Length: 189
Image (tube, rainbow, N blue to C red; front, side, top):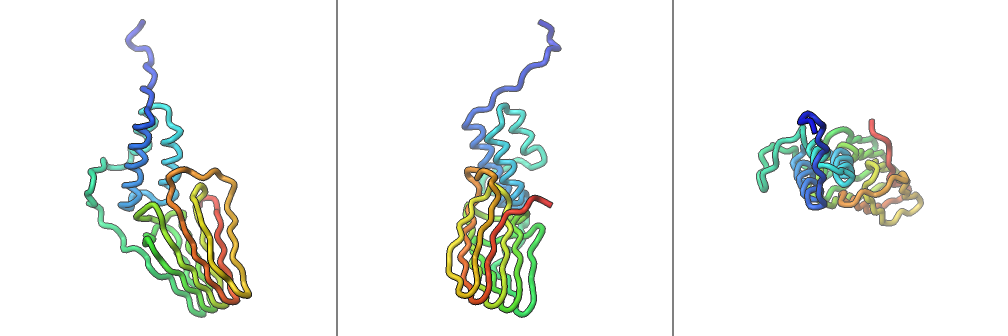
């Protein structure tokens, strides 16, 4: 056999896939990956067959050293308030573990597709009085919508994309009076 023959990639183990997902989670926590990027790469990690495929998922990221937060991170957003007006949070921004969105006779849009998060779960408390709050999540993310709305509504319209195991849980607690809270997925930009 010729030494120039192509050598197939070395098969990846379940343990190697799990280790890479932990590394991706660390990069998401330090702000190098958005929620959507993390979700996509994690899905690809679980589907990878070879070590080369796993290596390509972190080729553009520095090596992770446990417990070192060497990257200056944005301060997490704790409040989004719209009174007789509107506020939109789009693009890359950091979402606190717990955050509140308040709309009084106004509107709020929280686009989580490029958001940076710190942990495996975030809770958004959405309060609206004669206004509306829209939360946009990437496909494959688990979402839980609870709460009570009087003379208004709350709805969740997520795509049929399969939920990716290990992605963060987004809990939304909706409270409204003559207003609404809408949660939905939207394709990437």
